[in-house]
Amino acid sequence: MIVSRRTLGAGSAALEVSAQGLGCMGMSEFYGSGDEQESRAVIHAALDAGVNFLDTADMYGPFTNEQLVGRAIAARRDEVVLATKFGNERRADGTRVGVNGHPDYVRQACDASLSRLGVDHIDLYYQHRVDPSVPIEETWGALAELVAAGKVRHLGISEAAPATIRRAHQAHPVTAVQTEWSLWSRDVEDNEVLATVRELGIGFVAYSPLGRGFLSGTIRSVDDLDEHDFRRHSPRFQGENFAKNLELLERVREIATAKGVTPGQLALAWVLAQGQDVVPIPGTKHRHYLDENIGALEVELSDDDLGALDAAAPVGSSAGDRYADMSTVNR
Image (tube, rainbow, N blue to C red; front, side, top):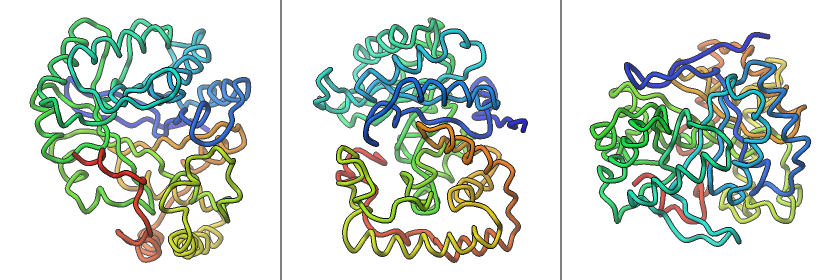
């Protein structure tokens, strides 16, 4: 199949990417052990299929995910729209330092990412989290300098509140806001984030569009997860929350079965149907799941389908917070 393209942002901030991207985080951390050979094969298969929008961050690993992605794309850089992030500062041993938006750190982080990725520019550079101790204008002033220097082509911000998005956009045009969005994480529809980006002409990149894998329908118990999988400590995967969320999943599964698709494909198709300014970036480290995810691009949803999904998984229907610590999101 030919993967279609969508445009994030507008005017000088416009960036054309594949309609679906590939989240690379799980290849290195958070979802159990990884296999670099298979992960690189996944990246190559994605590029072969026309999925050119790759998403990583310096804190994944930490640092090792950028290195993996860099090795995988070394001979195919011109085929890739490469996105990475800064701001969640970690040490090499994995300990977390905190959120850092100081201008000097921004410059250092960018140079370090360029080196690990083995590239001379980053196509889309996100502020991963907002540092409340640093005015957003100072952080984005440093980012604008990186654009002027040619080290970065476009800028984005992740998990930011509407007022913060507006201030960042005034400092330098924002190409994309990246925030969690799926059938079980619909906060952006209710907290003005989606309305704000659309008012400003900013693209929306939906991370965890499969609900951290939950909407794939393959996780029936936390015992299905690797012992080092961070989801074992996620509120939505615990006790009564998990049981209630399984009920939501079953409603989605019924609709998927009626359409002859998998629950994961239906969930991705729903995100894709939210607008041409929306690009989901499902993550996987296995080629067979990549093929399934790409298949979602061929799933057409009618108004009746969309209505049924809204009824099955309305805004606010998921049980439990998205993170154990919600203090760094939407600020």
